[in-house]
Length: 214
Image (cartoon, rainbow, N blue to C red):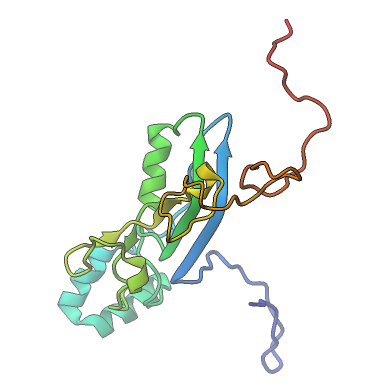
């Protein structure tokens, strides 16, 4: 738990402060759910860049590293932009991996312009943490990617849970999720299979009955 509060130092009075960005990196977000977008699309809503300063770029920083060395370049970056070494550069996402374990259904895909913003800001992780020289954790590197040659890795992963389609638990002795030998996850009082979902609240009346009143 983190608590941000006023602390008086000596006889100096506390002043107001502003927190523009805060993040915990590296980080993992694991979502176990069945996601259903009945009327629209499912996608990550793009947010502003964590580092909003367009002058604090990796290419200009690397040019300064070549010219004056890493230590001096880090000092200049902090003095000019207030960026610590761990701070991502402008136009680079933070090291947060998102995994959905379950299923995703949607009525239609999001517009291409919104998909482009999503992938630009949430679809990848740079291989280096800011200008620290440290690489992202190995668990964030999917199979088939090599940080020695790849400059980035994907960060948004959807893994389908076959139990949502079969309603049966997985058994190593019966690899097929639809094998009758695998026991059902949920049954009613008469032993009939139910959907592998929690007992969600339902409406006591019909919400839609197949007709449109004119």
